[in-house]
Image 1 (cartoon, rainbow, N blue to C red):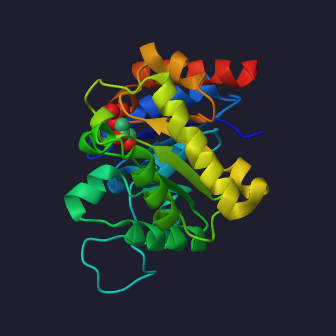
Image 2 (spheres, rainbow, N blue to C red):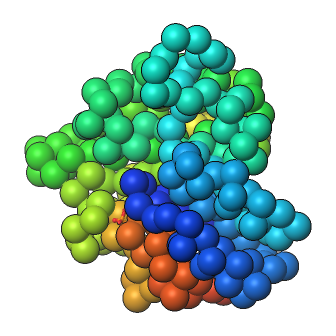
Image 3 (spheres, protein in one colour):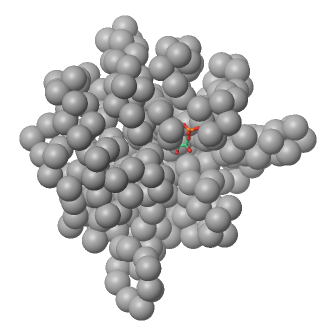
Amino acid sequence: MRRKLAAGNWKMNGGKAELDGLATLCAEHDGAAVDILICPPFTLIGAAAQQAEGHALAIGGQDCHASEAGAHTGDISARMLAEAGATAVILGHSERRADHGETSDDVRAKARAAHAAGLIAVICVGESLEQREAQNTLDIIGGQISSSVPDTATGENTVIAYEPCWAIGTGLTPTSDQIGEVHDFIRTRLEKRFGAGVGRSVRLLYGGSVKPGNAAEIFTVSNVDGALVGGASLKVDDFSPIVSVLEGAANAS
Ligand code: 13P
């Protein structure tokens, strides 16, 4: 049984004021039947981890360098994230692939570094609208999965987030059939590469315009083990109901 996961990616948003919402989130979901992860900007990780201490809320980063340390101005290592209180890190988000030219090979190296530092790697994959319209979605996702996921992946240290680029921040979402097709495909790929044990234990999140109003439908799709939420994770009034819907799905399954 995979434990469901509600993850929030604050991206380059939020400040100290937003941390107050974490206390509310903790209070509303302590003892929840699902895992909850919030990935704020680097500068807030330490304070967020302090807020989360003693609660069922994990804190994560949004990127890390592939090296342990060195002359990489402006970068941050997986070990630094862990020392600040993070237990996970988002890697290969399409915004990093687009803004920083990150390739799947880069993402795999970063994921290996995350694993070595004891972090859960939340590895993102997703097709562009052009790729979907050209009916290349599964080819693109297959290529990203084989190159971005390192051999060190296990069910405990790896989560994969399917985030179609065209659904991020747009209010557009794929149909349930489209999400299910990709998630089933990723599951099969993982089972083939890592064997049934590991392949079936890696959690698969859907991300892209998840809101309180569409979460219930998305969480009924096969092989959807939770969500990676952007905009709606910034306000506790939006994120908390999504967590509640996921708890309902966990209790029903
Ligand atoms: P939105 O939920 O704002 O569409 O962002 C999704 C995302 O990119 C999460 O990583």
